[in-house]
Amino acid sequence: MSDTYELEAQARDRVGKGASRELRRNQLVPAIIYGDKKDPLAVALPYKELAMKIHGGGFMTTIATIKVDGESHRVLPKTYQLDPIRDFVEHVDFLRISKNTVVTVDIPVHFENEEECPGLNVGGVLNIVRHTVEVNCPATDIPEFFSVDLINSELGDSLNISSVALPENVVPTISDRDFTIATIASPAGLKSEEEEDADGEAPETEIIGEEKEDGDDAEEGENEE
Image 1: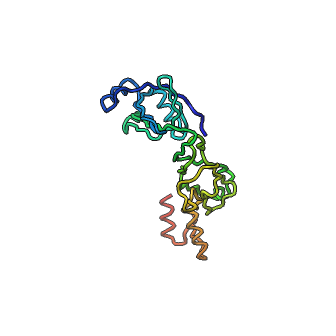
Image 2: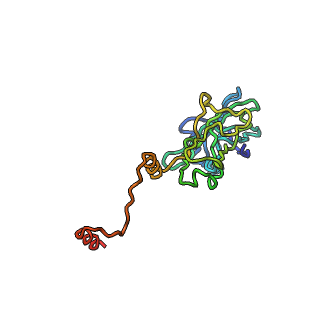
Image 3: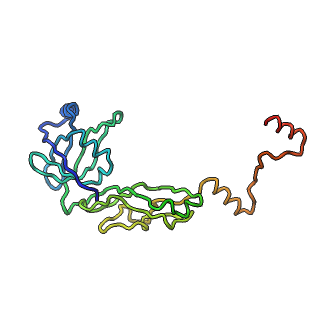
């Protein structure tokens, strides 16, 4: 799991569009903390610190501690909104968590040993079907990422969720099939040659610079040079 972090927040007395706009003008981000059978708590967070966490990566899978008036709240981000034009953080929803909280999160997938992958070394292409995998897991034990090892992957191989070593109590939300994460695919040119070889026909080869027997054609070639 990613390292946790702390943020200082202030409680909000007013909510609504007008109050939120005023907070943003003062470099604060309106947010809400809810869940764990407690009343929702409206807070305001410092824009600069929050934006750094959001754009730094791993924000949605990292537990945070938000301190409000001396009280600490362990939370996990659930959603956040960005201004579509300025990429400005507009609002964040946080879920309170406890040791028994189970959450649904998207875990990024990392691919290892690409340089040693047999399929890639003969001209194959890593076709990533899923950059993340959605799982159910304890909020206090969220994996930072999943690793897929390509060391033995050949051209045409499929890499499925069954090839990933999942931590205990981490369960994919798709449970009815062994879904594909990536494949080692043939590039278009290589596919064409393989298909022709399978048909028993050698691919045509154009020889650049060979003189043609026909006199007119040869003269035309000389003019083009």
